[in-house]
Length: 525
Ligand code: TXA
Ligand code: MG
Image (cartoon, rainbow, N blue to C red):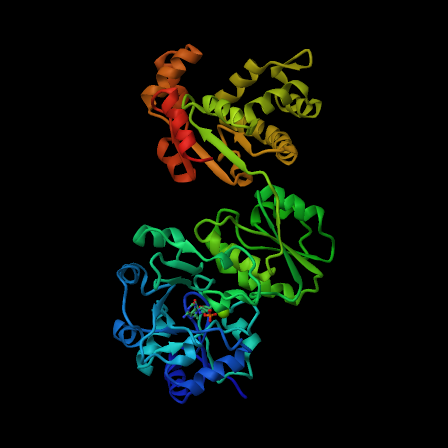
């Protein structure tokens, strides 16, 4: 079969083919879809054949208005209505009880039907012009990573389907979220473009289907048949390494050789030989990870690698979807590395030392950056030599005078930069060693966590915030400084809103110690 390439200004051609029971790949904001008339069994059968899709795996039906929905579903539960108001058009597929008129071919024997109202203009225009709903699975060969660009669709389906509408790369890059609202408590069947947290903010509690985070046997009855197949798989075997971003990177470094394909966050790219290494965004940039994941998995097929070792985000927000696709690509071949790293930061006087003491009592290992710096100044001859080179006046009989050094660098910003540049490398090396040696979860106590880019080592960041008045009175008591001196010292520090924006966990410490303790307990760290 010759596959036509349809440009975006030739949509009519796609409409005509679809009206003639043909199948056409169409861009959507999640991934490319392989579309067919949802009401036509001949067209639907072609989808299953072209993809090599298991016959028991139902399809999502795409609509462009709510009238189309009314014809396909038995009823619209209240919670579904709320979801539709908030997330349609968009990356959310809702599973309803199906109406009598709904086509059996798309539901594959289920009593339910999955419906999505997409946002992508091209897809919407095609449905509007066809005047029938369009069934569309992702436009890939079954089992391969979903397609997020025209080129991917061409690679999998050229010569097999009637046409491909050539649009831009998909904006989200992961499929829609699938949620079943036919049960008392809605169940998340597939995490995707809309997060569980976003959904819960609208309709309250949502259950997570077991198949999202763990392997299920092929014979077991599952809520969403698509979840039981190994999906998104590149040719090479895949092992997912789950845990702290630095520890997992070091694990991958240790267990890889020249023939290993490596998929890691940008943050620790420099640990690896560039040849077989691919990165898919910074650790904290899950949107980019979502956007690049499928393309990167496909790229591994173009190079000859024996095995792929991959890092994986945490199961929060869009991370749940990215982690789910990665784990499925590996057939749930997941190695868990234990030991989390919590960054701890905040302004002077906010109560970091008190918090550190409490965390120590709770069994955390504390890495104190100030202490590391002091120890290095005392004990590292290598660092000392470098400092002596740049700050000769601060040394007396070969020993550093910390007061002189402080005076010199605080009077001149460029000198402070030089000092930081020299010490940073030594401090970081020490932090890395301590993280790797830690037997338990770690608190990385760093007043300048963000400025020193230490956030990249952390799984979570705790910011301690506190009223300025309270901080001033605490510092006055502790350091015996005047209010003016304290204000001077505080003025270069970041304000509360900075910490609130950048830290996942915020602990307020305005009142007494008991409140503070309670706060820490409540956060379930
Ligand atoms: O973003 C997307 O959802 C893309 C674009 C093209 O819209 N489509 C897509 O379709 O990912 P597909 O076929 O690759 O995945 C559909 C998933 C499968 O896991 C399938 O089992 C599930 O939705 N599904 C479909 N109908 C269902 C139903 N009635 N009940 C439960 N799960 C259903
Ligand atoms: Mg699919």
